[in-house]
Length: 275
Image 1: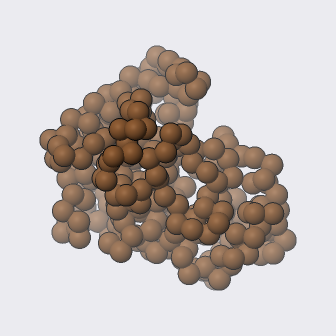
Image 2: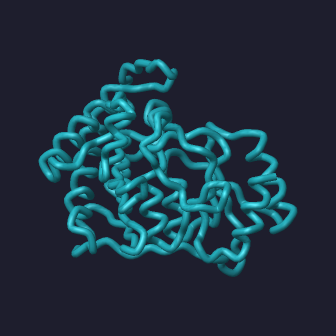
C-alpha cells in the first residue's frame, strides 16, 4: 500500500508488532499494578511500550516520544517540541485485564499540537486503521490490501442514529446530552465499545456520533482522531473548534464531540453539549 505520508506504512507495521508483544499476556492472569492515578498497568503495557519506543527511535530519531508509560517529561521540555509521537501502547487496559478483545495500540504523529496522522491496531485480530486529515483513512487486516473507509453523514435506510459511548465512563452532562439528542432525532441506538475503537466505528460508517463529556487523556484519543479526520469526520471541543494537543502541563483532555464533518445536526449537537 502506498500511503500518502512516508511514515504511515512503517508505523502501521510497528503497531502490529506491538500487538504481537501484547498477546502472550492476554487472558494469562497477568499481574496488575496501579499507578498514582489508580489507572492499571501490566507487563503487556510495558512490552508494547518498549517495542514502540525502540521502533520510533529507529524510524525517526529526531522526533521525541510521549507515551502513557513514560509521561513524566517536564512541560518546559515539551513546550519546545514542534513534532512528537503521542502513544498509548495498550489503550483499554481494563478491557485487556477482563479478557475482552476491545483494546488497541495507538500511535499518533503530532505537529504543533495537531494530529498529522494516527494508527490504531487491534492485537487480537491484526486489524488496523490508519488516517489523517487531508490524507484519507484505511482499514486493513494483516496480509490483506487495506481498503478506504469514510464516515456516513446520515444513517442508511432502516438504520437508527447510532451513538457510541464508553462502557466504563459517563457523566451527568453526557446523559443529558443523550436525552436531548433522543428528543431531537428520535430513538437512538447506543453502542458501547472499549478503547479508541469508538472513533473507528464512526470512521468506517458504522456509527454517527461519539460525545465524550467525561475525562480522557491525550494518548487515548489522538491516533483515532487522525483516523476519523482522514475518513471525513472531525473531533471538536465544546467551542466548535478542532480538538488539539498543546504541550500544556496537564495531559488530560477537555470534553469533545466526534462526528462527521458534514453532519446536518452539527450545531444542534454543540448546543446540547454546551447546555
